[in-house]
Length: 171
Image (cartoon, rainbow, N blue to C red; front, side, top):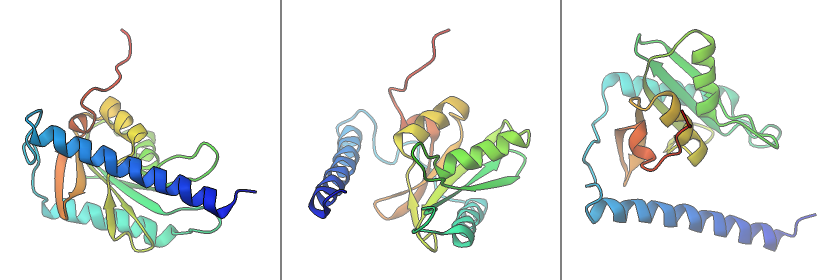
């Protein structure tokens, strides 16, 4: 059984790594690799509806105890259809973005416009995709816009810009 102190240290290390990664990205933007704000766009009415759809997904399915459904996502396709998902927590798990994308693909969709993920009982917090999701977004929908909250402001940025030195498949 894990001791509470060990768990606390692991959470502190994880949160430090997340903060460090965010600071590195900001510094890269500031020092000229990419200017902060360049390539980012404001949200539209449709984007606000997409955020609300992700929030509705997690409101209907939030479970922080038994199944750990704590993140909801919604992806909008070029034809305007929206598909939602919630994270599936297990040993291997799947993020809410992956579930939403998989649902869209299962329904024959291949052209994606925007995606967003939210966290919490009411989905109040817009969260960025994890590293694995960034790679999936880069592979499946590099031109799709990802809705993020940067320094308290909701913006959109192309998926391919979230992973500047991404892995690419041979061939």
